[in-house]
Image 1 (tube, one colour):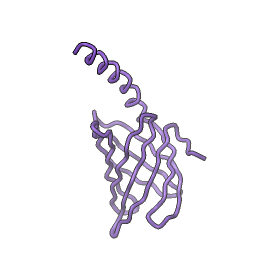
Image 2: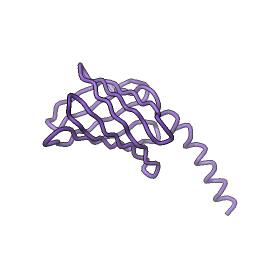
Image 3: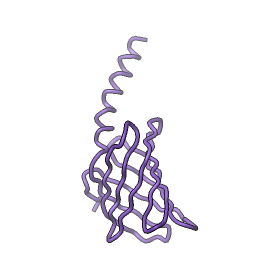
Length: 124
């Protein structure tokens, strides 16, 4: 049992720095439901223990939302508005700090995908 507790403490200690890396600027690459590709940036700022403000800038468009981090995933789920339309995005939080997302927006929706890369750099 003691070894299990020590291993758990060790893994928890390693996870803490990764959690702290989520605040800041991310490079964004995505694909809309119609297949068009886009890139831009997103900024994540903590509002509380598991609550985050997310602001995207893609071309001339800006979207703003509030999300909840679900530690069991870990999963970040964000409700947002852009251009008078509402949307929701869900991101699987990766160990390297990337966020792999699926999103929908507006009436009729459709599903888009998005990757956020820490540090503001896109994969290109």
